Length: 426
Ligand code: C2O
Ligand code: CU
Ligand code: CU
Image 1 (cartoon, rainbow, N blue to C red):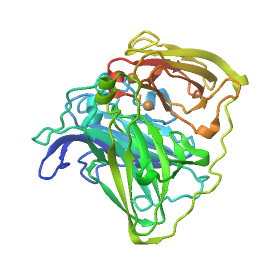
Image 2: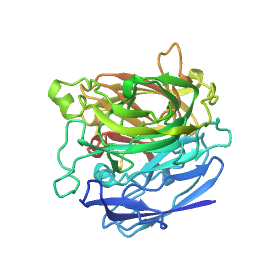
Image 3: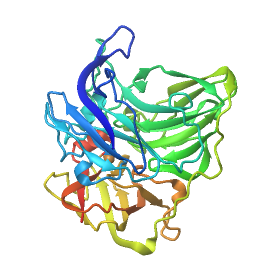
Image 4: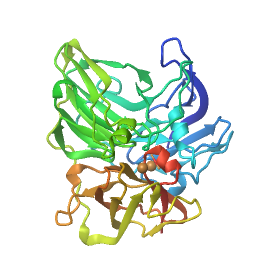
C-alpha cells in the first residue's frame, strides 16, 4: 500500500515581488506548503491511502477528479472533513495512466477554496505506457494554469464575477507569476491542467508552432495529434509535447475565443484576452530524449449495442434538468458496470462544461459513427453556448445505493450555485 499525507493548512506566499498573499495549501508533512499541493503519483494496480488532516477553521473535502473509485472515497460534498478533522480514503488504482488532480468540493465553497490555493496533481502511471519524455521536472512538466486578481496589499481579490464566474487578470502557472521554463532537452512534455474557476484557455504556441497532443483527461490518445490550437475548460487536462531547437524561445499562450455571448459578457469572461502563459527557454545545447511514438495506446470504442440506458441532460441557467442541486436528492440511479448514452444539451446562451465523477467517457460525434476513442477518454467536456454533446459512459462496478457521485458544470461558481446533480450506482 502506498501512503500519502496531506495537511490542509493556511499559509502565505509571495506571488508579486515584496507582497505577501494569504493562501491555503496542501502540505505533505515533509515540506512546508505555501500554495497548491504536492504531485501525488501511484501505479496502476497499487493500493493507496491518503491521510488528510484538515487544519483549517472550516469544513473542506478532498475530491480525486478523474479517479475511478468507490463513491465513499470520492471526496465529494458527502465526505466532509470538519475543521480539525481527519479523513483517510483508501482505494485500488485501476485505470490507465493519466494526469488527474485533486481539489476541495465542500458544497457551496468549492470556488473560494480552490481560488485560495487548494489543488494538486495526481499522476496515475502504468507499466504499459508508451515511451515519452517522463523525467519529472526535467522533460515532464506539470503546468497548472490559474488566473487571479490581486489587491494592492497583495491579497487575492476574490470578489466580483462575470457570468461564467471568477476571472482574473494575472496568470499563475504552478503558483508562479511571469514564469519561464529552462529546457535542456529536444522536446518537453507539458501536463496542462486548467485549474482556473471559469477561464477557458485557447492554447497556442508563439508563431503558430505545432505541438503534439498525447493525452487528455483519461490518459493517452490512441495516436498522437498534431495541433496548433487547443481549448481547455476548467478541470480539463491535456498533455502536449513541444519540440525546441537549441537556444529557441517559445511562448505558450492563450488566444481569444468566441464565448458565444453578447460582447460585454464575452469580454468580462475573458473571451477577448490574449495572455502569455509560460515561456519555454531552450538551452544552447539540448540533450536528446524520446520522440513521440506513432501509437500510444489501444482503446476500444464503447459499444452502442451495449447501451443500457439513454438519458438527456439539459444545462440551463444554473440548473441541470431544471433543478438546482440538493444533497438529499438522487437524480439518477445507474446499474453498476453498465454503459449509458448521455446527450448533454446546453440550452443556455452561455458556455458551460460538464464533468462526471468516477468515470471516463467517450465522445460520440454522431449516432452513426458511435463513440470515437481517437478523441481520448474524457471526464470533463466543454459545451459552447447552445451546443449539444453525446457521451458514452461506462459506469463503475462499485455498487452503493447510499452514497452518490456528482455530475456538474465545472465552472466552479456555477457548481457552487447548484449546477450539479447526483447519481448512485447499484
Ligand atoms: Cu473537479 Cu466534482 O469536480
Ligand atoms: Cu470530479
Ligand atoms: Cu456552468
